[in-house]
Structure formats: structure tokens, C-alpha cells
Amino acid sequence: MFTLNCKGRLLLIDEPIVMGILNITPDSFYEDSRVNTTDAIIAKAGQMIADGATIIDVGGQSTRPNSQLLAAHEETERVIPAIIALAKAYPAVFISIDTFYASTAAAAVAAGASLVNDVSGGSMDAAMHSTVARLNVPYVCMHTKGNPQNMQAMAQYKNVTVEVLDYFINQLQQCKAAGITDVLIDPGFGFAKDATHNFQLLKNLAVFNQLGCPILAGLSRKSTIYKTLGITAAEALNGTTVVNTLALQNGAAVLRVHDVKEAMEAIKLYQLYKMV
Image 1: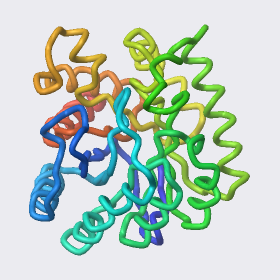
Image 2: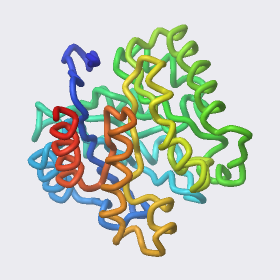
Image 3: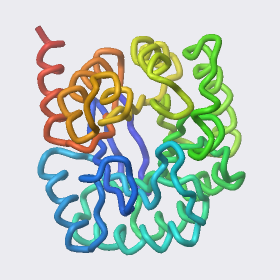
Image 4: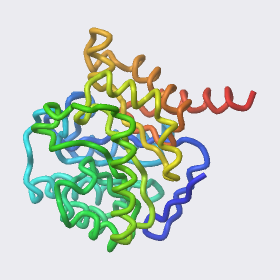
């Protein structure tokens, strides 16, 4: 069980929860995840909340391999109106900002977000850790190497599980030193990792429980699923449910997904399975 302080509101994770993906982008890898009008943003988030999402994760730029890098001010201009609208429409939901820029994180929290989800773990903006500490919000620290533009060339490991575990041991020390109170860890499936690395991390996910932090699994419709099956991201819902179930079995506390209803169904069935 984990309790996270989200700007004075407590987020209790006593069973797995779902983070719904809301992309304010024109180029995210899964086309159906993209929204770009206020009405569409409100409607999509509302459906995810109705389906059971605890957190809505708002992102302003794609972090898929070889994506185009946006400047911080461009990203901020995309996400802030969406966060303001969401916070007004759904005051009970927890909003996270998906960014590796400290300035975007600060603006998003001021607008209504209460978690920061950083795919770089602080490596792309030296001010991120101190900013999150000052904001006093939970921090999703992900493992990657390089940046989205060059990360796949860095998918080389002697033992991916050991190296990612060592990374988190070091990162948690840095986060604590900076003053961050609550950290969630994300192994970074698909970030500087090939399919074999991803499956090894998934199989060994329980190893990360020793860190004492909630584990976030972001596998939804990723290429490890659809390329392995010889299909497209649009056809990868069933495969996503399979790997999400494996993640739950191995200790995931948060599922970051495009399809909230199906993830909640997987959680419900898994919880009942555990009780037998």
C-alpha cells in the first residue's frame, strides 16, 4: 500500500490503479490517443474517468523513437489550456503532466496538475528534481538512455534488469537529496530497449519491489506488442491486456494505458484471482 501526497490531497494505492493517456499532440504513435480541441479533451478524459481511471496523464509532445523535439515553451502552450479545462471539469481526478522540462512541470502544477511524469528521470533538464521538490508533488521517474531522438541506438545492456535496478537506486538517492518525498518508478518499456529487453524487464518486474516505490508499467500498444505479433498499434489491444496482466502479476501498481476500461477489467479479474 502506498500513499502519495498530491498537493495536499492523498492518493491511496492499496490496489492497482489506472493512468489514462491523453496526448495533446499531432504525432503520437497511436493515432486514436491524439486530441487537440477542448471539447475532445474533456470528452476523452471524461470517458476514461467513467471507465475507472484514477490519473489522467497529459502530454504535449511525442516521445516515440525519432520523434520531433519541441521546445519547452511550445510544449507548455499545448498542455496548459488542457490542464486548466480538465481541472475545472473534473476536480476530483488526479492530473499528471508528462514532461521532461522543469518549466512545463511548474506551469502544469500551477494550472491544476498534481503529479509530474518525467520520461527522462531528470536527465534532460537539470532543474527537474529541484523543481519537483519545490512543487511538493509525486514524481514518476522513468529509466531511459539519451533522448527520444537517439535512444534506440543505446539499447545495449549486459543485464538489463540489474542495470535498470542500479539506475533506480542512484536516482532515488538523487530524488531524496533534492527533497522529493514521493517517487514512482517506471522501467521505461520501449525507451532505449528492444523487445527482448522489454520482456526481460517484464518477467523480472518484481525485483523492483525492493525499492519500496509504486511501480508504473507503460506497455500500452507499444511496438514490443504489435511488432512481435505482426500487427499495428491500432490492433494491439488484446496484446496490451496480456502484458498488463503479466505486469500486475509481477507487482505493477499503476498501469499507464490508452484503453482504461480494458485495463480496469484486467485489474478486477487479477484481484479476484489473487483472493482465491
